[in-house]
Length: 241
Image (cartoon, rainbow, N blue to C red; front, top):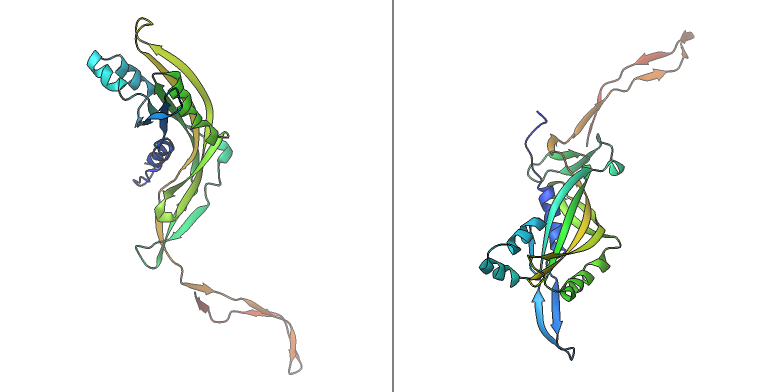
């Protein structure tokens, strides 16, 4: 009903761009003399917070496997909302050359602005690992960090997308008695200000135009007789672009 079938993978690109920001975080553990004795790369995975909490509550063997992978980072897309403040004129089109066919162009109406809500989860066994990871993230958001995404390659559109840090909170998760394993979870809330694009249409290039010139001749006196103003239509003039 709404039109032709199309898919630009825009939301997928937003999710991938957000996750890429946090895929190269490491923590270092030092001894009493300040020498680095261990360097751990923090793994990153997509999934909601409940996924990791439930994994911690599984059987003993499965819990040991997950515990060996802590610290870790998880993130998830939690919501999408329309942003009327960034709304552009809907009827304006963007035009680009069609490299697949000569003599035609590609056109696309203006995108529609949407805000994408993300949550980032930092799961650690001790407070020191959590604060070390946190200090590698927070300084870059003031409170936003801008990335460039190749949103519509066919149209040559690359967009600067701001990612805003809204809040950061901490919680402790215990299983049963306090003597059992402790899991600290930092939750960071972000807003990605993106845009969703309509379908791309193709059209022909205008190479020839036809213009009708209607010229009004002023009154004159010819052979002693008064000739009033008159209008005549000359031949059609063709211009080739």
